[in-house]
Image (cartoon, rainbow, N blue to C red):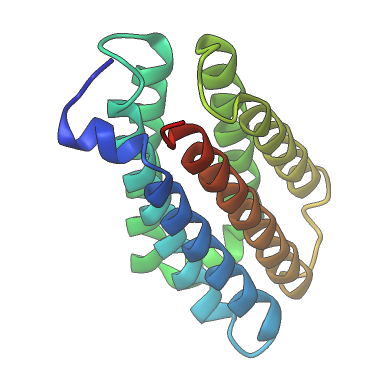
Length: 183
């Protein structure tokens, strides 16, 4: 197992706790003010993509020395960072393409989570990773299948998704913390 400081942080329950809390706060804001704050929502989602990119890059360091899942997770982290920066820089374009961008991203992120869980049988919270991944794929396919969803509906869906993702990350953090306690 990789014992670098970044790898230890990626496997830490506090890292998952922090990511879950950021996701929940972002989701609650999106649900509470979907109409008048769509521009803020685009910036918040860009911020979430940046946070996800950092989370994935740090997490890739904890997946061992060399593996396909580590490489894919690191690539997804870079893509997420770039997408987040672009989203914040071009807010109006983002609002026009938000459904497609989120749909594609959630599908790719979902498949990556499932693949990482399948590739690493000893991964803590493996079943949760598969569940989160499959929900991400389903959410992405839904957005791509019905691109006519209004931005308001999209804002509510994105907010609810982020709250669910955050809650699952909190559950995973709790599970990792309980598992890591000495007996």
